[in-house]
Length: 473
Image (cartoon, rainbow, N blue to C red):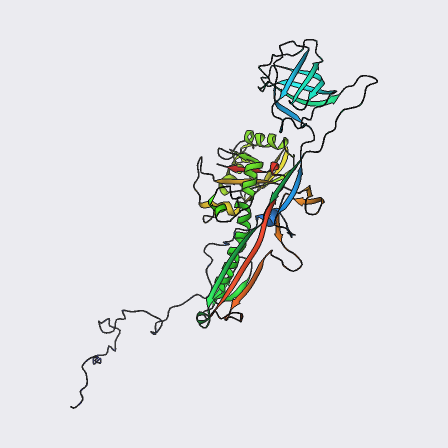
């Protein structure tokens, strides 16, 4: 049977020699195989700017090794003792009285820091007056003391019962008669022991060997300052940056696993992050941001009752920063008229600076924006309002503190915030990275891919948490 030319597919007999749009010369598909190639930008456009949020701990803390799975340290207790929950059944104008100390930590263990012969101030919790008295007897088992008042009028206000909070007492000195024995008993230093455990953080980036054979270069400028062309390693580089961020945010957000929790059941322990520690052992400002000087006076009053650190840095979100700027601007009596804004020479071309870097009122407060609280992919995207738990800022004391390091066995200077990572002479787990697979130069497994692994084991030590302030809604 003779062959035949098939009618399909056919051929074009009517070419278009002129620039006339016809159905036969209109291109309906677009791909890189035709002659109309697009103009492309080699350089990647940084539409979100610097995307990393880590920098907080580098500014206020330090990193130091530890070879233990548990970090312990001791913090000083108060030098002087005050009891605010003290009851009595004594009548008004009584010359002597017995007081029951109800806020003693462990009754019956001799933990009362009051001894015979000491002189005390007895202040009525109802603000009805105060007395001065000398202690004549102490019973450490029942946590009671007997006193004799110096005033002829005796007790200024009758007590309501030994189990009630009638008065506050504190020691201001002592008095002994001639020819008597010395002070009976002694006081031991009151230290608080704190500890924290490191957690292990991991991440991984993988690319198979086949994809590594097709190179597509992209010019980038990275957040750590590097510039140039990256191939498939661009994704590896971003994995590294993301892991760096998680190293910091884990130290901020980590919480210990509570008993009977699902995490404990799954053999996870957690760790004490900065927010957790300050929320439990520090100070919390709630109900919106402090927007007037009276609010900051309340904060300063609390700091007076704590360590009285001279310099403090407030890391805050954008709205909190605006509130501080508005508060400071309102202190300028000419602010409304605008006559004293800007540079002091009142140049007509001066720039109007509506921001402040800090202020002094009793203490020095420096403020700085905290990107972690502004980033919409992190805490910046969380809802606002009462009960939301949103964190608007964190006040961190500057400088360092002296603590007794349980591992070193001696006093050591430490920043208020610092990271401890596990390390020894043979294993450093501060920041480990290694490559596995059989591609990209690796040749240690039969996996047709290159895997980049990241690991760190660390925890944060928040020392002197009573000097921190957490601004939370």
